[in-house]
Length: 320
Image (cartoon, rainbow, N blue to C red; front, side, top):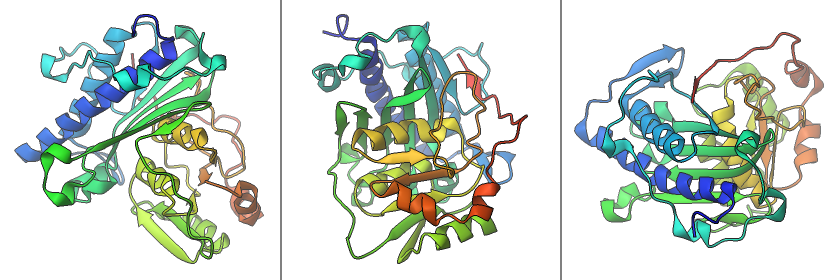
């Protein structure tokens, strides 16, 4: 079945399997207790779990899809030997049973870029907010996010049952999204999610401008979009240049697969070609519905802060 499946379905199928392996790697690092924390910059941490999960994901996907460009958040030594415990060669059979959308059924290796955040929510991971942690694998075709995998390694961790811990959500635009129960948020409220640890005056003013009845401050772009697709919030507002392509590619694809919208703060789509700047320098706005209403609520002086600069550039990340 796998050999005859379209390339996109094989990549998503493999990404589902490898995200679960990466989740196990993350849990093993935490269980051992030595997180190996490194400060990459202000409010930007890296742990051994980030590094090990990225080794797992990129090495596994590169072995199966050697001609596809893969970008990961962490800077790692490309010559490092990857141990067998980090390699996942299986594919998820449930994904392969699905029919690929016709417009994506013949995409080629050169059309695809995979964006990997091996551990989204590192800061929260280090202080025990484990339900904020996600593994993100996003698949872009010709610059557009079309497929995504979001794995929560600590979903239901409060129950203390490791055999039933974790869940995988995946989606493809034109096919749908799976692994969760979609619900619409309360009609008589306007609940907004935004950053827990990267707030600024602009971030706060943008949130206040959309007239929230409640603000939910959590870590990780993946976690915020999960709150959105499960109907726990109405919008994700992040008026900051802080997040990167690997933070948004997978969540955007899953959100769009169920009819939601993720754009920058100016309403423009975020592009995921291999040569784009890594930073989302125009911020992020994500909604299940009424996207234009939220865009129109953002004051012009805030939008002006996100007008593109002619020589904008981003971080390189790690590429295979």
